[in-house]
Length: 330
Ligand code: FAD
Image (cartoon, rainbow, N blue to C red; front, side):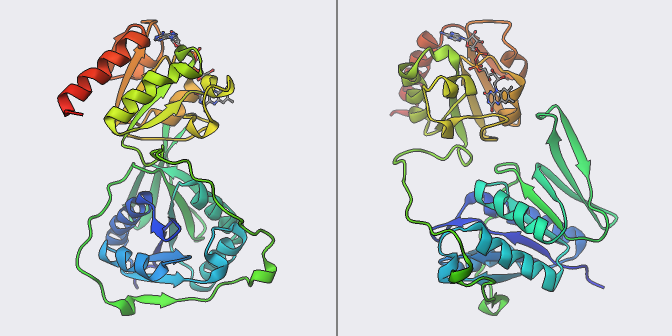
């Protein structure tokens, strides 16, 4: 008998799927092959049919969509009631979602409603003897833990953005692979109304960024982020920060990387004036290449860094930006 399906929640904002959703779909397709299961994309909210079409083109076998006014904005009550209702009715083998802010909230809530658990922040998935094995960092990234679900309950897993490759788009799949489902809650049952969004123009999202330049207490004040921002801009990357810089009020919390901030895994992470405390490492240690710039050659960040510069960031960063600009012709 074919095992139950693997479901993938496609996180989207205002009709556009997040890149991490496609990475999750790619990982689900690998699992689907290993388990000989179908891979079903779940798309809720505006533009669901178009996003589902892209999911099919990227490897999903089928899609369940719900494009309803109650789901136009992400409201966890509405989304979780829909997801847990579908899980109860159709019993998938696993529900995968990207570890984005919205999807984490959704998966946690729906897992409680489904009386199952969540394996959060996976960086590896495998199938062994028909069992899904989930690898995730624990103890602030000091250890990797591999675990599997027991008890036959649907396995809920969130996947760390940028830890899995994104599948490319293939041929357009047949539209009859898309099934429409009804929302679980009517507007009257919802207690939250979204009144608007504030956008911070021109900023690259930290979790999606392939390059991040971060500043810590070593930048010395808000204006010290100037050279950090400059290098981030020249490289087309995002700007991160340590908690010390955030707590000092030099930069907004949305930039914080670490245990109590964002978890990132860019191709390049440049840590400037950051000592490399374990709580900071927890958010960035899976970055592919880490570069550290620090005055103190004993700073723990150098143990993690592939390249290190012992020096004053106010001298090193402008020189680095100038050289990158020259080489890239910017
Ligand atoms: P410091 O440790 O003070 O390091 C500053 C560094 O800058 C030093 O290494 C110094 O040599 C260098 N420096 C100074 N001047 C220059 C210069 N001109 N040029 C070059 N280098 C220079 N921290 C996080 O970052 N993220 C988190 O999410 C987080 N969560 C936490 C959760 C808990 C429960 C706790 C207890 C702590 C958490 N922290 C977190 C705080 C963490 O323990 C550290 O205090 C913090 O990361 C230190 O930030 P920093 O490296 O910028 O500052």
